[in-house]
Amino acid sequence: MLTGEAIRTLDQRLRLSLPAEMAGALGAEALIAKERPGCVSLWPRAGWEQKQQQTAEIIRQKLASGRLDARLGDVQRLGRLLSTRERTIPIAGRGRLVIPEGFRDFLGVDAGGEVVVVGAAVCVELWRPSVWAEVIGQEMPAFRDLLEDLAR
Image (cartoon, rainbow, N blue to C red; front, side):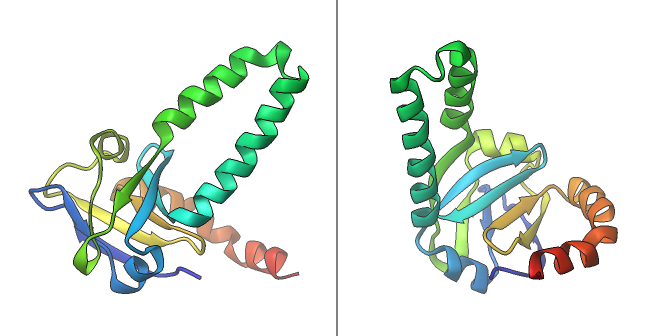
């Protein structure tokens, strides 16, 4: 389970160094995905691709059977979002990665800016510090209830 929190700086060459344990868990390649404005996530590539393939197969079957004929606009919107939401990126030595341009814009951090790196159990999240402070402030009061609910 990926846990921890660290503050890193996006260097002038737009590289970010992950904590060693997080980089090790991701491997040589990760999938970067847009989550919400101010946050992108890094996923181990194999697990993400398997989940996406399963989901895509369900949608293909529904399209083939005509069950989505009345929702073609939603299917098109899903395709648009999928095609711009994720990308495979290499993780170099010492856990360094380059956040691709569209993802960096979505994250809202420029060269020299800080990024909060958060272990989110199943993935690593990269947050713009102001957005992270807001989200954690909203979510922390419900921590105990969430933990108890998931542990049941």
